Image: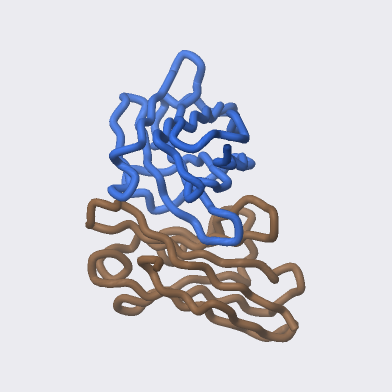
Amino acid sequence: QVQLQESGPGLVKPSETLSLTCAVSGYSISSGYYWGWIRQPPGKGLEWIGNIYHSGSTYYNPSLKSRVTMSVDTSKNQFSLKLSSVTAADTAVYYCARTTVTTDWFDPWGQGTLVTVSS
Amino acid sequence: QSALTQPASVSGSPGQSITISCTGTSSDVGGYNYVSWYQQHPGKVPKIMIYDVSNRPSGVSNRFSGSKSGNTASLTISGLQAEDEADYYCSSYTSSSTLVVFGGGTKLTVL
């Protein structure tokens, strides 16, 4: 079955860049579907960050677009997220998930990784 | 403020049915059949329960059903069980540049 696993630093300093990777197993990213990032601040709701296709095509949330970069590495069957100039407001659990071109669903999800922005 | 509006909380007794609403606009919920619902237990990963308004993924109990009328989508849980107590989020594709929007979440309490 398809499984996703996020990895990356759990602590990032303010103004620095948050970098996360999502490793996919049980399915080849090159076979199709889109791949997305969603975050959830502690005690709050879900926020879509962006999607990427294996070709490298990306769609970003306009509210984060100026700070977000997503990339894909089909040879390693993984995709990545970079969020620059982070502040405490970026503290959240970051999830990666499989989705579609119309983003009508996210499934499955990775286990999520908590990233704290603090000096 | 979330793009889709959900009640903050709903409650019901075991065996009863409850409905959670998700209100958007004609640019999202009302304009497309791309509404999905997620269940999230405390400290756990969101799990898809309904996609494309009313479709149930394999393995999801048929006690969960989805529907839509105008700009409002609904998730109905029948025969409430203690294990249904969780947070529920709706999401929808949107024609705006945001692409997808989520509701603020609804906390379901099983009394």
